[in-house]
Structure formats: C-alpha cells, structure tokens
Image (cartoon, rainbow, N blue to C red; front, side, top):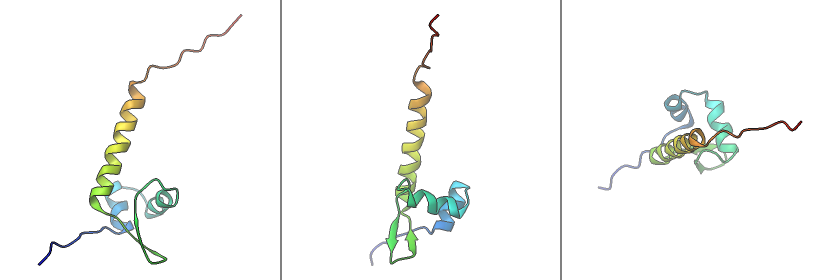
Length: 76
C-alpha cells in the first residue's frame, strides 16, 4: 500500500497561519501562496509547500532587516 498523500484545506492553512480563511484565498489569488486547484472551486495545500513558503518569507524578512538603512541628506 502506498503512503497517504496529506493535503490541507484552506481552513486548515488559515488555522496554521493564524489568519482568516479569506486571507488564505487572497494570498492564493495574488499568487503569493502555493496551492493545488482541484476543479473550479476546490483548493488544497501541501504541508511541505506551506513550510517552504514560510521559510522563504522568514529569510526575506531577515534579509530586509540586515540591510543598512538608507540615509537621506538634505541639500542646502
């Protein structure tokens, strides 16, 4: 018997991310969150893809925080 493929619903992803389900749908619509579309109205999410997405966002945030702040000088 092959291992069972576990997929998450939008509601489950919302619970994991602690956001509203609408936010999950918005992220998918904006191509920010990876999802599998099953038919016209059914979305499913691979747990590994959600973890990778979170890791990428965390790395991007860390990179932004490490950048030196731009100094603006007023000319007289």
